[in-house]
Amino acid sequence: MAKNLTLERAQQALLSHQFEEAHSLFNKLIEKHPTDPQLYSWRAQALIQLNLHSAAESDIDKALSLEKDVTKRKEIADFLKSLQDEIAYMGAEPLKPYCTSLYKAAVAGDLQQVKTLIEKGADKEQGQNARNSNCSPLMIAAEMGHLEIVEWLLDAGADIESKVDTNLWDGPRFWTPLMKASHKKHRAIVELLVSRGADVHFVDNVGWGTVRAALVDPGTKDWEAAEDLARWLMNKGAPITEHAQKILGKIEGYRKK
Image 1 (tube, rainbow, N blue to C red):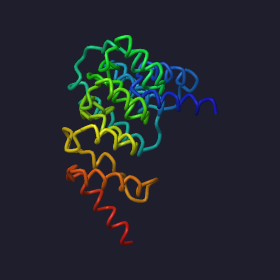
Image 2 (cartoon, rainbow, N blue to C red):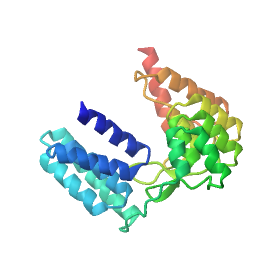
Image 3 (cartoon, one colour):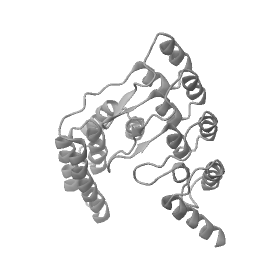
Image 4 (cartoon, one colour):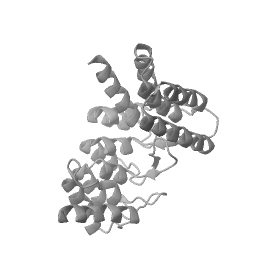
């Protein structure tokens, strides 16, 4: 049970762009479970975010040496190939991590602290470095579903079109707060952002728009609610990209079964 709880915390830290904390938690897990290949693979992802590529490659090699399942070994090998591409993108220099107090308050959902920090002159845009780009407090609040904080940051003048490299390991992918909220299915935040002028037409550099970000494969959990959100965005003018069309096609086929 303790391992599962720590792993859940470590994974959440990674997904919330708290890369140093994730790294620390995976270190502790590996100390107690040194023969678990999955832990090395997860820690490598935290190391990538910190630009510690040599250490990440070592972890992937370790995971490969420990993994006995052929299918999982192939997944790890594919990950190693993507890591090599990542190194070419990110460069060799380690990141100089930063994480502002305002960002931490936004992550925690602490509206009063957000207000206090803004009133004291905190930079509304500086948050935490994710890969080699800045994840703003508005971005993380939209991703985590903190509606009141999103609204307050918008009222305070936060950039509604701020961008962050959101992809964790296979190359740059720049998203807006609306993309993040759509992907996490935070309907109230999506509607708020659109009502405040967020660009529903935005498509990222690999061809995902807000519609595709909102969609999930049919048959998976809450797929109908995801489709409803996607169609709401379509009605607001969001484009149906090639990626979105494929999922919509799957949905139609699923319904005909």
